[in-house]
Image (tube, rainbow, N blue to C red; front, side, top):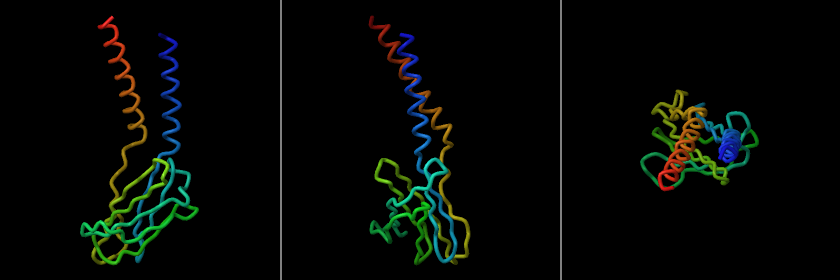
Length: 146
């Protein structure tokens, strides 16, 4: 039983470290007349040559623009009007990030409103606590039935 507990803890640590290394972060910056998207893995490594899709405001499902990030993980587009623009960054390996970029009416270089990402360590602790809790539930259920 101790061996299984140690192995499961090691597995959780390996999975958590790999998840942190490949987390896709994206941010938007307004620099008139363009909006610049920067994508990085784990906050440091650029996400090069991945798909980016831009959807215009007014609830239109039709995309405004699509393309790839450059080798530095950057992509830019020039919005044709104000509103809340939806930007999807997808590396097609299971990492995807969606941003909502608010473009003001007089596009004067205000900052973009991107939703704050949950703290990375908070998500790791939440995942670990869920795994430990489920393991405790399974062992408790087995001991009750035995």
